[in-house]
Length: 102
Length: 231
Image (spheres, rainbow over the protein chains, first blue to last red):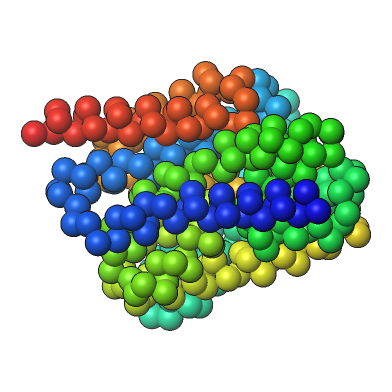
């Protein structure tokens, strides 16, 4: 029973964290400077998330050569082609290929 | 954005579904691992699974169930899971302007589906007309929701059936990297992204992924500083 209650509280917490700014700021008009600032939230948090995914869940362990190679390939292919199917196939091929070699 | 950029696809429900599908596939092992974590935790399986519809937050669910299974106190497990989930505050902040143009029912419903993948797909779609954005977001969110409910349930019974040699989970950071790059349209944003990655890397030892939060904040601050240089 305690665990079900915990899960419910966590569900409320999860929803609250995702909803708080969307709902609180729904009627505020953003000054241009605030909109500029918001543009940096996406790149900052996405970049941090990508790096978090490369680190082991326990923390500490550095990404391997194959992971770095795959990630750089993904960035370059996305920059040049803007096509995510190419990003997926080429970056995974490099990731697997380098992983096989080292 | 994952679909062919040259085709003029007017149907954003379909596009949202297809784009989400590509992100669903590398997330399958993660969903199955969650099922395994529930079984190993000793928490009743229906109770463990109920966190999927109630929380709908993969990493936070695994953190909560694993720590409870390891005998941590409820307060400790809940705190760790909240810290793991705190990155959603940034998603909420980032999505606030685009949600202003949405009807109220959608502003209340959309946060429930604002998982990593939905944010990654939709953050670059903010210039779409409001109705198209909503269709795209709903299709991507519902696709991911149905997948997560089904495969976390499947994981309770089958465990991680995928061969360990075939490592497809790396496709998630790869696709996120691609989505990140396509949202970068200035050197300032590029600098912010590289900086945030570097800070996350340096803070890898911080508990419960809290390095991510510090890094995202540091990146935001750098962005504001660089923005001043522009003028």
